[in-house]
Image (cartoon, rainbow, N blue to C red; front, side):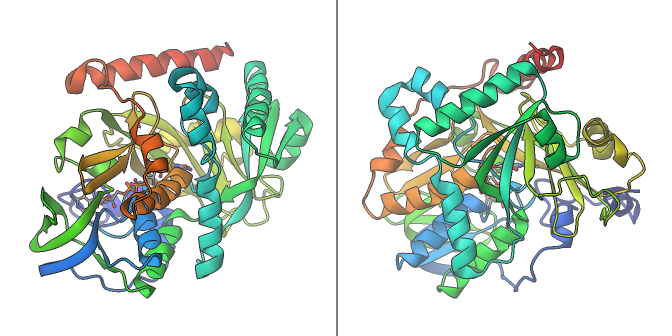
Length: 446
Ligand SMILES: Cc1cc2nc3c(=O)[nH]c(=O)nc-3n(C[C@H](O)[C@H](O)[C@H](O)COP(=O)(O)OP(=O)(O)OC[C@H]3O[C@@H](n4cnc5c(N)ncnc54)[C@H](O)[C@@H]3O)c2cc1C
């Protein structure tokens, strides 16, 4: 029985399911069960002044906070639940370079200037994460090596194209492997070829967020948990209202992503929250030595992709599936387990200890939405399921613009964004229909 099921059966149904909007308790994930010890972070009370107030303690908020604290700013972070409560504490932990739409699409749709500007930053996020882990001694189980895996012949060609494209943008650490080499590295016969990125890898995502929070606090930064922001009063300074307190700040960063709710309706207008699910097996011990012997993480090349890796205690952490509109599925294990068995049929008798869901934010262009709500109020959201590295990059870029350097911020802020077809009512079925089409093509190998 999964830990998720046992938690839900343990007592009366909670008013808000664990980890769902409105709840302040972490999702019942393997990560929540194995995070770093946390200090008390009391809710905001009274009036506080800061240079910068950041709303949301996921990677976007924490990355910005740490960059700004390093630059000497007085920063207050307000988090509705807990540090890393959102996608940042629940994700696949895979450091993947570039953006949810790659440089070739950016070249074609947005032109060479935009592609050059974004291309110069495409590999920076992973470097920021690795440098922080080293500098602050963050114990988040980093393991090197990220793998893209091709299931069909068409996807093998995509990998070749992918390698050539990233090399054109200066990446030198990519290695193509054939089917036999891929089977030896992954322990699955499913893949015809793989592309190994030596410069990335994977982490325990919640520990990364918690470690960044600790680094920020060690520099004098302040985080208030259980402090849901209800209103941002425009002005210079702006006043951010949360519960029984207010933060008066010269600058504000909104970093709430898929969990923003009704805080700033204009930020919800051109994006759509989506759920994706993850399971973690019991520790595999030495029983399946062929599974991921190199401990690299893997994502496949399907439109609706599977992603997996081994945890530090040798559980297989396997994710996949997308639920447009982010409804909470009733039986996560029944969605993800068949996917896992398709890749690793040898795990048919293995127990699932944890199953959870988390929300990411999709934009129509699949590119992140970055901009200003007012001259001193910034936001970044919508990395479309590909955000571990981007959120770290944009934290640096937001810190730069607050310090008066806007060139890299402008490169993102000038990207156009559009509402989903069908508006709020029909965007879910329309997008699901489009995804079903691409999923069918993957299944047919087209
Ligand atoms: C299951 C899953 C697997 C994923 N796997 C990967 C992966 O392997 N690799 C990858 O690159 N990307 C992955 N992603 C995407 C990645 O996790 C996200 O893009 C990234 O974590 C977004 O970070 P964020 O800080 O913008 O948002 P979040 O981490 O969601 O943080 C937003 C925070 O804002 C807070 N908040 C919201 N409203 C308020 C308010 N009014 N007041 C105060 N606080 C508020 C929330 O409580 C939350 O803590 C995955 C996502 C999910 C859900």
